[in-house]
Length: 250
Image 1 (tube, rainbow, N blue to C red):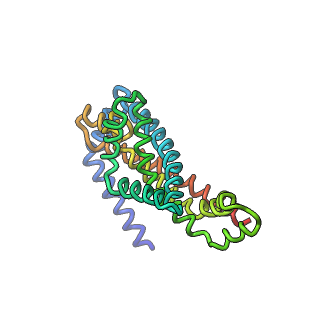
Image 2 (cartoon, rainbow, N blue to C red):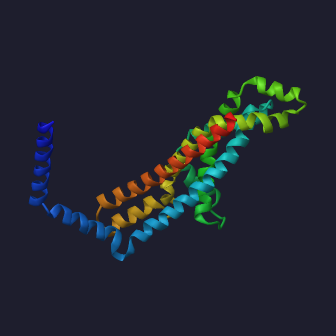
Image 3 (cartoon, one colour):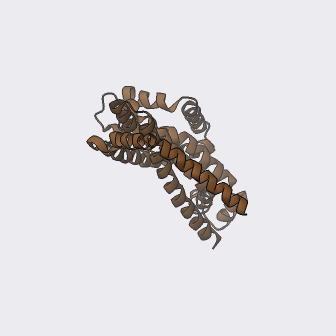
């Protein structure tokens, strides 16, 4: 034990000597931090970027769930036409890059429509997310035991009532973790909105990098912001999932 303490003490001493011999590193770190974030209030660009990222992510997630549910219903429908529409939509969206979809929707489909950039970007990401959410919802519905449907029909519920009151609540409990993961992925995917002129977290970091000719500090700062946002969101979603499962067990 004493040998371990001596070893740690020796390591700490060497680290302190290294710092004492090279104090310029920390001075440069402080100077770069000031230049990148404090000078000219450049941190405000990142704060504004956080707001843009949150707005785009929330609206995209809402649209993705709505579109995903509709496409999931299409894919589970007895109608061949609806199933074909759902399959084509899913194949096209999942088979093309999200940045390409964003640029097509912004520069082609909405080229003559004077909507806010963040709304158009949200629509693009919502359409993209909808293809993945539809598969999650479809899998969740299929995961519910068929006996639940038969039980609902035996109680006098029609197909729509059975789906709404029995199947979907159970499916949501099953797919909630997957939906949370999709939302987290969506937040990170919004880092490409700079292609259509939106200043999100990533674009704000790029502007700071261009203005200061410093790459390390803006990129690390951007990564830290995304990490903190996603970590906080993950903790909140984990709590929500636990409460949902407790309610389902009652």
